[in-house]
Amino acid sequence: MSVPKKPGGKALEVLQNLPRITLANLRPEPGSKHKEKKRGRGQYGGNRSGRGHKGERQRGTRPRLGFEGGQTPFYLVIPKYGYNEGHSRRPQYQPLSLKRLQYLIDLGRVDPTQPIDLTQLVNARGVTVQPLKRDYGVQLVDEVTSAYFVDRVTLSHLAYITRELGRGSFISSHSSRCFVSLIQSCGVLFGPSRSSCAGSLIPKRMLPGEDMVPYYTDAENRGYLADPEKIRQARLALAQKYGYILPDISKDELYHMLSMRKDVRQIFFGLAPGWVVNMPEKKILKPTDEKLLKYYSS
Image (spheres, rainbow, N blue to C red):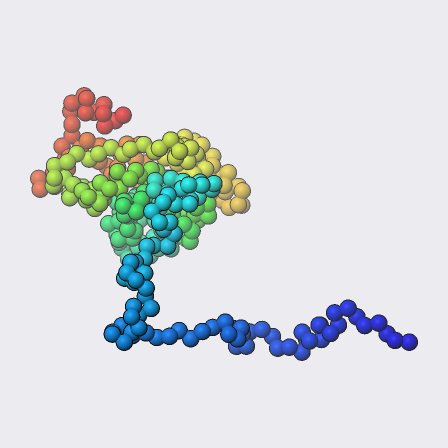
């Protein structure tokens, strides 16, 4: 009595005996590759040297990838997906890890006994802000450090825990593109001295756009427009969620520094909008006109 053969037995046997496919035994199909004929560029190069007659192909000036012959590009003709919608207006934030920030503190380039804002970070050469590339500030990411207060950043969730567990304090605040451009052009960011040499007033900080207001008014994001009491409750809720004890910063020797906050319209700590800093005479000129005071405080 003959035993029926298993279906696919021969094929399985062949597969078991064949070597494994690796980069060492892969070969192109015979006849699929043709050796390119090398042509010279002189009078013996074969008439046009294989580059055709005139135009961008002969001269090597082909357009960029994705160019569609001067017509409207496909992704604009059929905007089915909004991946590129408003790409020219999207704000970008330079990443700054807590490890990098601790490194700057250890080198003495950042003073942890003072509030750390965008001014101090750029002065320490810790970040590079480029307004032409739509840089709107700094994004603080994870990794552990010592206690300090950070202003004008966006934060990742783990960064909240790392800072607040280490007796730190966070505030997410807004920097407009105009402010960052002013930082680069007038030297406002590198200290009041450079901008005051031109006799310009310290400008007031612009408010965030309509799409960013929900972020900066949310206590869970530690937004600078949020209610301080709600921020305290959010810190306590985060500590209860992840099971750690929230330190009492009121008993810290740096409590005064950790509790410092800028006004909504303020750019520098200790300097109000509308003031002029006279560095040669070491004086601060403050406006007294009611219209100016109302403008810079509104």
